[in-house]
Image 1 (spheres, rainbow, N blue to C red):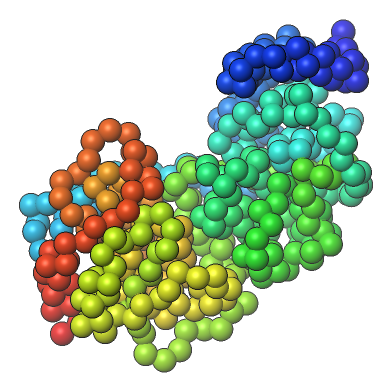
Image 2 (cartoon, rainbow, N blue to C red):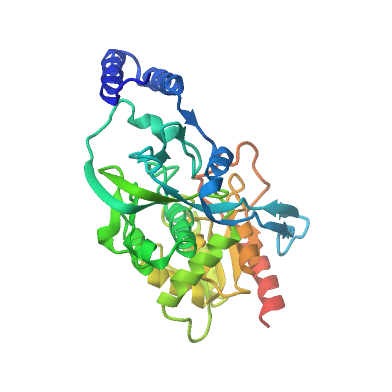
Length: 400
């Protein structure tokens, strides 16, 4: 028979006091491993994404299959022998929406946003690791009761792995737009939306564009929502979004904002944080010769960001979260990503293909070796003469 929650918590708190004498890394290892073992002994099953989808299948309201992509080789515009990305067959992952009744009070939303039943801890995003961060530090949360809960996200935000603009747009807003497609309008408009909030201006603006009243937005870190039914949606591939989410975002966001007008522009998206261009003044001198406008890296409203990308016909800049805004581009827009040879992921190559955009890449020198994130924060050097040859070839072929 399972012990009452209060007894279980007190036992873990007692263990925590004893472990304080040990190094922090050892404590984390012991608690993490021990917690998994302990909860499994109590009968909990920590599901992965496929297992979660299988268990929730009876409650499915909508599903989109994986979409296959044939991605062409991406070579240097002026040196075709230098290949940045080989031609591949790629695929996203299937995504779904589920509506669950309370199952006799068995469902509970946890502080990190995830949902558990009496038997299962569901995984609707990347993993269930954040479940164990609450074991020793359970905090009393405010109580709120609602008929319908929408739980779109199940990870704490650390500002490193989770918590950026890309994560919110594709992994939270994208799911909320998908959910809007799957449940009745009245249900969506009355539901409480609860997850660990990003607490950013862009989050508030996107939620407003989706007609979600601020009074219905709840931070699970501070508030526990009791509910009669729960709406869940899963993340597909972390970096390669399902086309259904791309379509849903465009469908629900773009009509709320002004349509593009006037002459289309060429823009350079400057970057002030990590992965900035080391010799940016020299680069800007080159770009201005091609009538490419410099867009400074500073806070902008979502509406302003959408307008920049919607009105652009050519976008160049260092790889970064801002490029998730290619979501709003018109078909045929050209994205030109600048990389370091130690970090050149193909996230936006994939998205550009799904959106019908042109795509190019550049880095100076040969590709680095090692893990894909080894150069995550490395700054970028641009050999201006090399890039000039790329731009000359591009604009002569495309615009003259």
